[in-house]
Picture: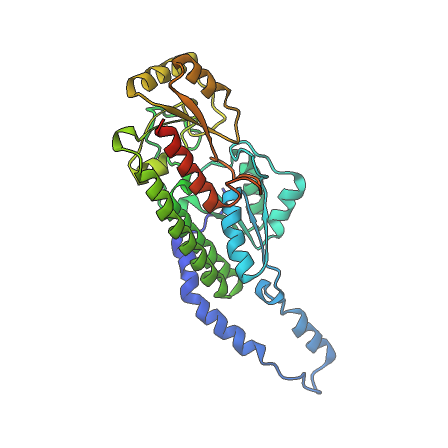
Length: 336
């Protein structure tokens, strides 16, 4: 199984970092090698002290998804190091598979940040193998009190009972930023990563207030969501929305609906007076379009940024922009 960092382990970094820094400061003051010390002993002493990532400025972080990659890069760009994102913009995290070069790079990185809870189905074996080979793999979703799937009345989510789509709760993503910073502090002994993570978390929480305001503008009776798959549970839970149904009756895009599933969804949409079906930029909207056509002209299909950020010229180029854009699209769709 992939090695999972617990909250206790990660937050213990904050308590131990002062000791680490104290030890580093005492070792930074060195005296010249004693003239009587044999050359071989002096050479062995130097060889045994490999510089830490923070000392070399070469802290390397790999993130699986574009959302986690953006948050991690904010921390790294502030405190130092490099960030690599495995998934390209527009990729569906449910079925993305890594190249052999990407798999090899995970073993050499200082930290590999994954969403976890089965989101990256195509990376399961690669992540487990990397962890077995010594990679420092951090699964974030299990650390931020994940919620259970609760919508649609279906069981086959492909992830188990816990919902991996935690980034739709910006408060949880702010927590994730702080966990990442604490882990980097533990790795490097540099409290700068914790400080930069706190700044990133504050920015996310400030933007969350904008998202809350946008979604609060929808009357309570209209806060009904129908989505392409079961991905908006965290958003619905946080802002008082209901997920009435999903085109794909699962928490993964890899599942397929039956004709009975689609017929039941059409009936639900008609009964609830739903005005929009929310699709996903990472997946074709053909099924959602077909359901909307079956109902008639009163239902529109609105495409959200669900499993990936948008491109650099899109309105969802960063995680914060993605969440603000999605909130605006949801509000527009439900206002008819």
